[in-house]
Amino acid sequence: MRATLIYGAGDVRVEHVPDPKLLEPTDAVVRVLRSCICGSDLWPYGSKPAADHGARIGHEFLGVVEDVGSEVSGLKSGDVVVAPFVWADNTCDFCAEGLQTSCRHGGQWGASDVDGGQGEAVRVPQAQGTLVKLPVGEDSALLPSLLTLSDVFSTGHHCAVTAGVGPRTTVTVIGDGAVGLSAVLAAKRLGAERIVLMGRHAARTDLGREFGATDVIAERGEEGVEKLRELTGGDGTHTVLECVGLKPALETAFGVVRDGGVVSRVGAPQYAEVPMDFGVFMRNVTLTGGVAPARAYIDELLPDILDGKIEPGKVFDRTVGFDEVPDGYRAMADREALKVLIRP
Image (cartoon, rainbow, N blue to C red; front, top):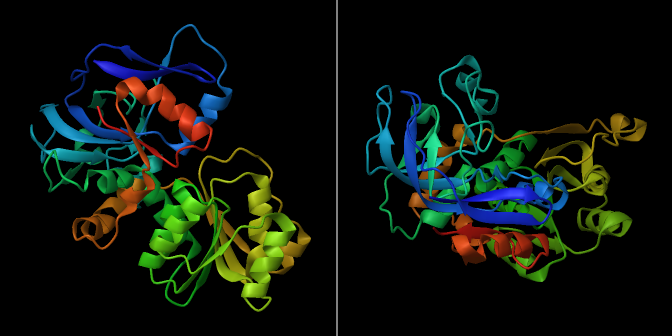
């Protein structure tokens, strides 16, 4: 079969690899219907040292069950399923607490001997705990939105949930990438009435308004902080959702959050130091967030997608086949595409 491999910075190739097969009785083999390129895939795409052998990549996919191991129940050949961006048994103590990202028996796609999600098929470890059956057909128009449950929409939702977004909170979302726009949609779904989106790409912020943003601020840095303070009577907002930014984005977050408020950050952080000085401490600002346990949210979010109440799949603005995957990476890295959908 064909799969995506990364050899180094800017060097993504589609090559033939061995077809996946069951290795453990808890495995399943899934034929991929849709996968995609994540913003976090762009970090190795921009910095990975060159290697003689490519590494599998990709962690967002949905597909059709082709085969299951002898210890897998509740799934059968022909089921359409979505996989969270980490695999987990969904039974250990951490999973029971809704923290499948810390599963004692789980792991990451593309690590060790585990397939990456950007391939024509995937061996799924701990399949019974990982995969979520979807009540749709292989050709459903909902597939792009259902795919966002794998990572991007669940991550935006996690950002809003950990910040405590609700009907009585005001929200600032920093970042107009796919996660930021997903956070806008998640905040709206949770009842927030005022959602300020900080972003400067018109096509993206227009989608943000469609998703529920009430205000858009294009300015950055101190100018952006001042603009938001003006919008909120000088106070800032109760919650700030910092979505996959660098350290200046977090500094902006502390600048626009209301005293006693909460800043939540999601995405793969690319900095080690957090600028929470004495002034931030004196304002009783809370910093939270972290990696999203997507499996914990899928059951809650799925019905609204099936019912057509939300359409998070609108973050996909380009669709490619496998031959075009390298160009899909380039387009996202060059900000020509918001998020690229891969259709094998």
